Image 1 (cartoon, rainbow, N blue to C red):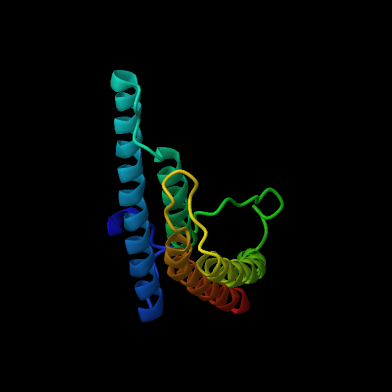
Image 2: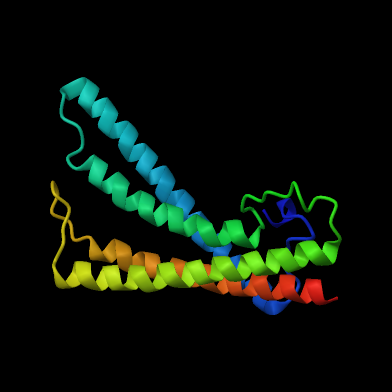
Amino acid sequence: MAEAISQDVRPTDPVGRALMTASRWAALFGGVTLCALAVMTLVSVVLRWLTTRPIPGDFELVQLGMALVIFAFLPWCHMRKGNVLVDVFTVRAPKRLTAALDAFGGVLYCAFAVLLLWRMHESALDKYDFEETTMRLALPVWPVFAAILPLLALLVATTVYRAVSWAREASR
């Protein structure tokens, strides 16, 4: 798997390698969760077709699982420099300028990730305090929000790391 990562993306320092490894594990967790949701959906559809009785609350389980999946992939995407870029104006710009713009974008992304982490933390506390549950299965919702928090913390760490590395590149 590491061979698929281009050299300009693969960190060489210990912090970058640790973040890349943690992000890879988070993405693997997201992939396994996504596959489990796909299998559950398939089974539910087949049961609905055969018996007119799908898996009860399948849509709730997909909803909660997809929240985990989305946040699990964000750190890996950022570490791989996989975010969508519009470089029509910077395609011929000097490397230092593009690195400075990347650093600025990285700082903005970091601020957004910190905001998400803060608000998700507050949401998890609210959902716990008010004992919010899903409608059909009456599953508590707060554990999913709590499970998203370390994934968002990892995203914050990756955005800080990438912003600093792009700022160093711009200063060279």
